[in-house]
Image 1 (cartoon, rainbow, N blue to C red):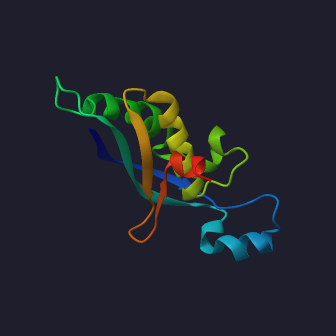
Image 2 (tube, one colour):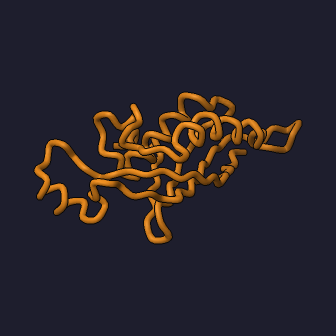
Length: 140
């Protein structure tokens, strides 16, 4: 019996959407106000979904403390109150929330081994959210 467990986390970060391969005019056209040279920030809400069999001894998919510790150490401490443009993960990537969701998924795939990380969902605003599941890539 496989069960999904989804946990919610919050962090704040800033970024500027800008591709150095584009002209300034093209950057403004593509990214609009998100291309502001001073950047802008978001109060991100991160949803992490893991899945696995229910442990017959504990009755749980995984220990929530283990998941919380991993997300705190590997994601929140890394990105909270940071300028994403200055992070090594975005040295060659535009720090869009799409790219951030994929990045966070990769971090969790490498660092949380208790059960499978199924997907991450990153809410950038009340109107924008981005969801990434590595299995989507495998199906292509």
